[in-house]
Image 1 (cartoon, rainbow, N blue to C red):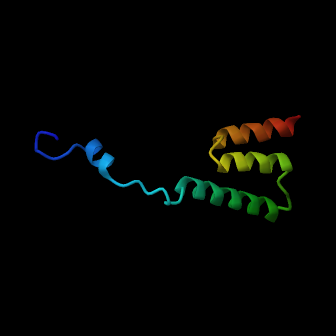
Image 2 (cartoon, rainbow, N blue to C red):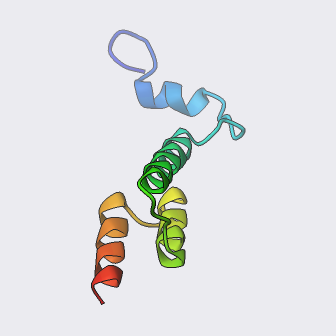
Length: 79
C-alpha cells in the first residue's frame, strides 16, 4: 500500500489476471509489415529469395530485429 492507502501499481498489476489467449499484437504487426513488403516487391516484378523468406520468418517470430534482418539480407546479397 502506498501513502494514500491504495495498492501500488506493481501490487495491482500482480493481482490482474493474465490473458494467455490474447493475440501477440507485435507479431501481428510484424506479419503485416512482411506481407506489405512482399507485396510491394512482387508489384515491382521481384520475388523474395528463399534466404530472404527465412530471415522474414525469423523477424516475424521476434528472433531477430528488423535491423538485423536487413543487415543479413544485404550481406547475403553482396556475396
